[in-house]
Length: 143
Image 1 (cartoon, rainbow, N blue to C red):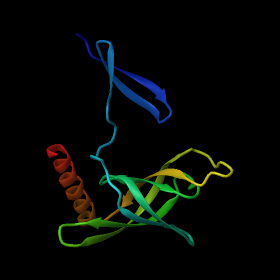
Image 2: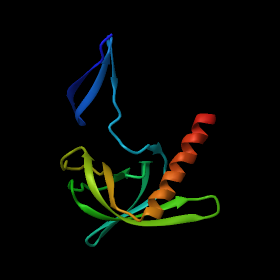
Image 3: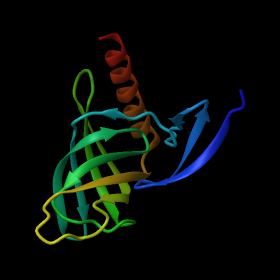
Image 4: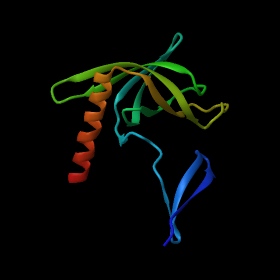
């Protein structure tokens, strides 16, 4: 049986789907594993600051809900509180807004889901997030 790839335009952009027989399978485009996790996150831009929680996290970024619209490509200062076995590791890095849902300002809307790409982060911090993600993936696969 021949496998082929097709591109489909979706609400999240163009995605590749692997078509095997009659059942298309989504190909994961993310390079880093991601886990659902609620971690304290502080975002700041200019004179504004938002204390939020992650919905999910990976070494490449985080997904969260913010109470105002953030324009895609906005540069943010990011502070993440990452729990470790003994303490909480504070991670300070730079991030860029890469996706906002809904994608435009809506009157009376008070919640926007925001995807943030960590574009500047110390290797030790990225390694700590990788370790955290790996631990939680192993824990969820065993229980």
